[in-house]
Length: 385
Image (cartoon, rainbow, N blue to C red; front, side):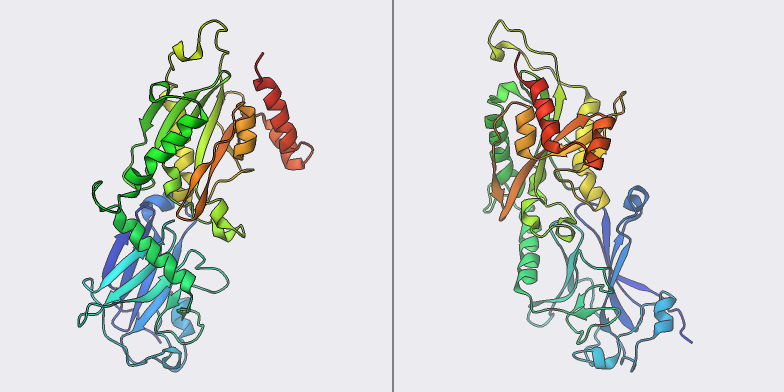
């Protein structure tokens, strides 16, 4: 019968998004690497749960895996014949371990630094697809697929992804004058310039608001006007890839980086006088907060937003928010779609949030109304008089 042993923490670190904790622990027999949805996020989401991956035995492993321990929630040792090196039993320390978070924050690699020559080795990886079909994570000392870990694959794409993530997060520690610049300083001006071009606006013809927060992603929200609409649009959100996209689409590179535009009908402008003479009036703070909440939603709830998705849209009429692709949203706003340059080999998509009636939303779900027909109807309403 197995005895529950004292648990000793080696590393505890929260992800840059503040929603997942990375934990490395041992019980004097085995070292495990965990990704655990932290308490604040669990109250809000509860979708991520806990992912666990064996890292190393600290004693000679058993001949077979202890199923009773696994069922009791005890971190079991890996059988000796499933270890590449059954004698690799030294205890890592906080000084020799480093967590590298993947850019979307739902996966991480555990790296160990040699005390002799300072070389670094990936010893475990919990990728975003952990927890599916009996897979939990990869371990460098694992020789066979087991219930607690799989062998670390010889996969250049995975290794490159980890190295890119390390460089990405390290770059945030750089100063604006250093090379390379931190992503915020390097990327944000180009995004804002693209937005200005889209709306034919000068800096004086937009309103900017910061979105406060203690964690990534960071972003601004800009307000513009068209003859028929007020538009709020995020700036900087696309610096951070959305989680979970790769679990649902074949080519996540097309959908994981987004900026979100909120389209709000407004009273027509007067026909007399140039448009640039009309001052832009700031929308209520709650409208900005509504868009900010939607923008942060993917990283707080471990999901993603894309064209065709819908969301709650708090209005007195009980409308539903529908997300449209850039072509459809720009058509309703009577604008030309303006492509934002790719970032880190990914496309950047502007998706438009448009309120629609509950009746139209039900028709879309039943396929008695197509998105193109809905866009055409809204375009007719938005066209100049």
